[in-house]
Image 1 (cartoon, helix red, strand yellow):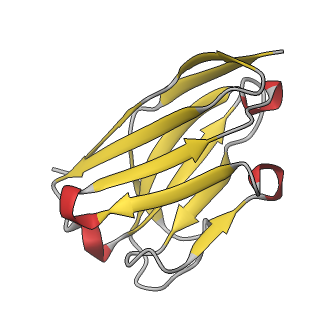
Image 2: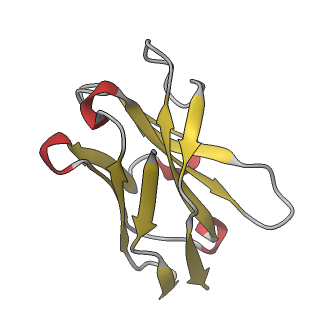
Length: 124
């Protein structure tokens, strides 16, 4: 079955950096667009950043543009999210997800496979 396992979360001070990693198994990784989503307590889940199956197309929500970088290594079935200049408002549970759509839809696709999440806490 499909498994997405996130790691790399933690507690950092504002201005710090973290690198999230998602290792996928049970699916043909290079056939799926992938994404990072986050959900803070009391807030709706939002698409943070998404990347096409070949890595040539990316999407970032406005609040993370210029600070976060999404990438993937299809040979390693791995998705990354480099997060720099972290802010308190970035505090959330971060989830990796795979898009079952056949077409690029940024973070609005059919993300039907999800990991269990990794917590990111940024103190100000």
